[in-house]
Image (cartoon, rainbow, N blue to C red; front, side, top):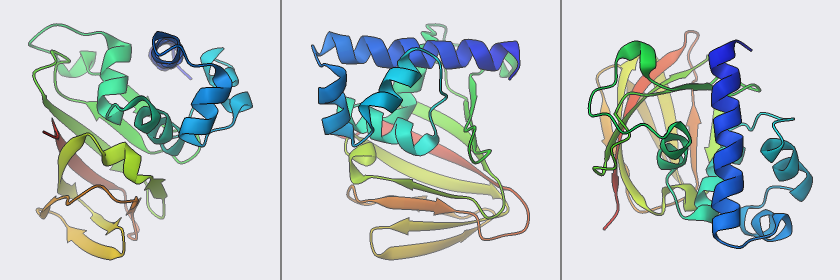
Amino acid sequence: MDLHEQQTAAAIAERIRLEREDRGWSLSELAERSGVSKAMISKIERCEASPTATVLGRLSGAFGLPLSRLLALAEQASERLIRADGQAIWKDPETGYTRRAISPATGNGLELLEVTLPAGVRIPYPASAFAFQRQQIWVTGGELEFAEGEVVHHLRQGDCLELGSPQPCVFFNPGKVEARYVIALTRRL
């Protein structure tokens, strides 16, 4: 892990701890609300373990925050311009899933994310991870199979999908090359 990744991991750990403490929740209460074990949350907060995308999705859902907002809060950016080399990048240590926060974290309600999903990788998220946001997925390279509840969407380069009501979802790359896609998020009214 390089220095920037270490700093990002430490910022995420601190943000999770702050979100939990701001709500007055114990580790046990956050574990119960998120479905993530108390031991894992403790390790994440102490920076002894790097959370996977699925774990972060569960924690953000428990906090009532979109995952992108939780990560943006960790970065605490307030500039309207964010250069490519200053955009926060997070990589799932288990799957190689990579997420780049393209938008400045100004809190204006619109967020753009670029995701790279390695071939054969499947990332599930609970419905709670989508409860507070509207989302569109625009595939910019490769292919993506997106399961939204019982409905499966097969997306190719150039396709754009607007998500429906919050449901458990699975992002899956069935191809032989990485899938790249942009996610546009707004807060659900």
